[in-house]
Amino acid sequence: MSDVVLLNPPLVRLNNPVRLMVEAGFILIAALLPAFVHSMGWNGAILLPMHWTVLLAGLVFGPLGGFAAGLLSPLVSYTISGLPAAALLLPMTLETATYGLGSGVFRKLKLNVYVSTFLAMLAGRLVYTLSFLFLGRISTSILAFWQKAFMPGLVSALIMLLALPLLASAMGNILQQRHDTVQKN
Image 1: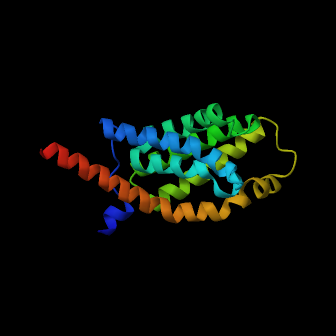
Image 2: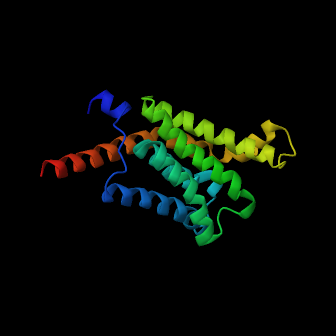
Image 3: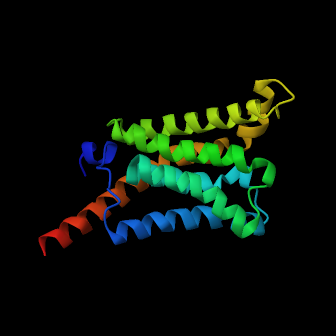
């Protein structure tokens, strides 16, 4: 596989039923994963189950697909399982919508997939912090807030940063090849 395809795979357009089903699958998986994680007794703040799929949607389908996954996933999850907790629903929805939109926008700007993932993660965390500030829910220093909010998920975030670009490249190439094969026939 060439470096160009690995570092800057083509974005996949949401223009056929299979791709729309994959996008709906991203939203459903992102909505159900937190309930599964919590039912297993695992800590969602450490594993960041919803973040994986939302970032992946943006990396594969661009800004529209990423934003839709990021906006809808927490809302669907809350409707199904009550997660995230009501107090976290707005900040997390804004965060995940930023993840999806950001990863898609950065990819559309032709930044490599690793840089796009990293910048989208930073943007999402910044929006999360700003939403807590705006809501008046930070009673400590920003550094103490960041330590409590983001340090538990740091290992998961690092794994995402390494794994998601590879997954996005593979998925994008598979979906594009499938589309090309259908177009030829």
